[in-house]
Image 1: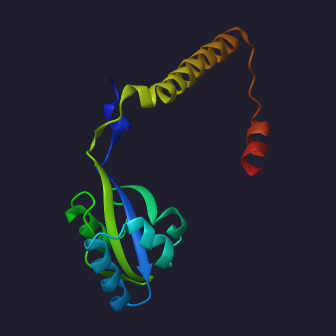
Image 2: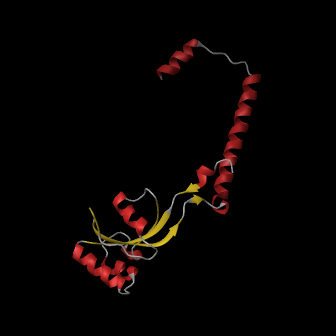
Length: 154
């Protein structure tokens, strides 16, 4: 509750893609998808992209993770809608957003373990500093100028 900004997530999209070498091929594939051919089936068969074996499934992306030209297209797509052909340095792409998630705080169930670890680290550091303080209080510490000079030069 004290640090909600640390557990905030941006808008996210689950994205699929098909990458091919020519604009004509991409347009042909888009027509097939619009007429009922499953996107994932064509991605497995035709895509040159690294995720072709997974049906073009690229996973979730947050705002700012994709190239700006691609993100602009993805932001405008409705769920399961197929983009027009997008040209990048890798080829000609078709994108499909299969899921959208809004920005907001992550549910406590997902971050509970992380929060617990962070709090344990803070408590441990506080105990360590208190212990060192007590040791210094009871210790007879002497500083020798000769050692300072050696420490500075390495």
